[in-house]
Amino acid sequence: MSPRDMGESLIRRPTGDRPVARAADTFQAPPTPLTPATTADASTRAIRATVVYPAPQLRRLKITAVRQRKTLGELVRGAVTAALESPDRLVEAAAAQPRAAGARTGLDLPAAQHHQLKMLAAEHGVTLAALILAAVAAAEL
Image (cartoon, rainbow, N blue to C red; front, side, top):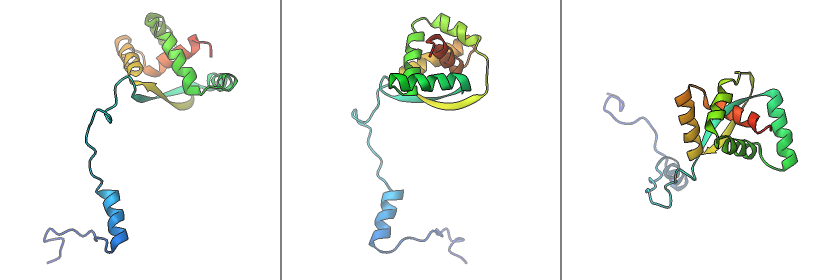
């Protein structure tokens, strides 16, 4: 009868000090306890959203970002913040937003802002990406 048939593991255990320590660090990291210091608040946490920008719009965004010495994410987050002040107008613009091929880009949004955009998108039957594109277009970036 083989060790496998007897329920024993076929994984070879490392021998010696260095491999044992490396295996312990890699595979057996102790769980980190949840404390108030490690628990992220919803307002400080960032959530990644993926947006497909049409090529001309992405080019304009990049040029504007360089001129203003900001990142593309900072520009878009600012545009979304401004657009969320009048959500009805944003939803209306997003519904008219054509779906276009372009460059896919990741964007980190504050959790509260992401939640607000997701709620608007769900309530009005548009996508989160369309809302973001409409916000960028409204900011004329």
